[in-house]
Length: 262
Image 1 (cartoon, rainbow, N blue to C red):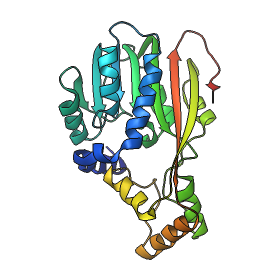
Image 2 (cartoon, helix red, strand yellow):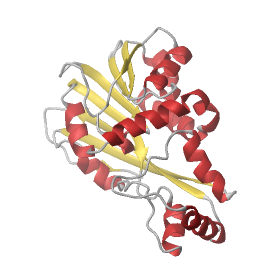
Image 3 (cartoon, helix red, strand yellow):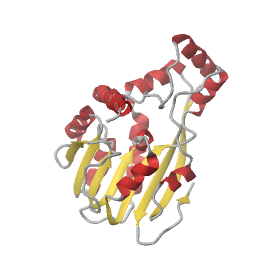
Image 4 (cartoon, one colour):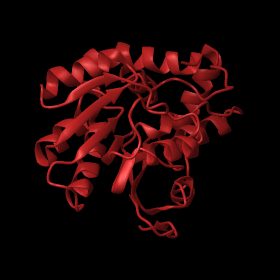
């Protein structure tokens, strides 16, 4: 595991105990992804892999509805333990890096991931790897962060003369293109804007859920620089945009063009 992956696992692991109390957006995204998955045509007892199960927001929504052979995985052992406590023994639980899945190819009916794909070091390569795990007719269903996420935070950095250390998230069309060409892909998107509040609470909120690992190659700001960014964020009216992208990809025998819906 790379140093960055180790840091991500450690930060989310440390946040596991209080994660549920500080993750309303993550819960909402999981519920909305689950609603889309429930509308799919799936086998009566599907073989499912969940990437980045966290404390079980998505697992709890989908497992009772779908049943089947469910494997819940996360890179952070503490998250896996929390998901097991929350959901119970109906699933298998494993500690696993979603970019290097330790499962046999060609067997899964469904792979799901709620707000995990934004942590992949190489999105296209990982999606190709996951696609190899699908049986004919299998699907990948995920929600991830899109390019408009944290727009206010990025603008505050620019106004203060800095570049934000948040990762570069994809536009909807770029996410669709990241899937292998032999998958039929649909991507939908929506935006949530949290009302303005204490700018410092935005930073604290990311820390509370373990989502504060900076993008590769970036350096944290000094205390004085951070104060300048927070002042710029307050002057700009605050608020926080979350741009959510929902992708459903189907393994089929024919090559299809990706579609982006709104």
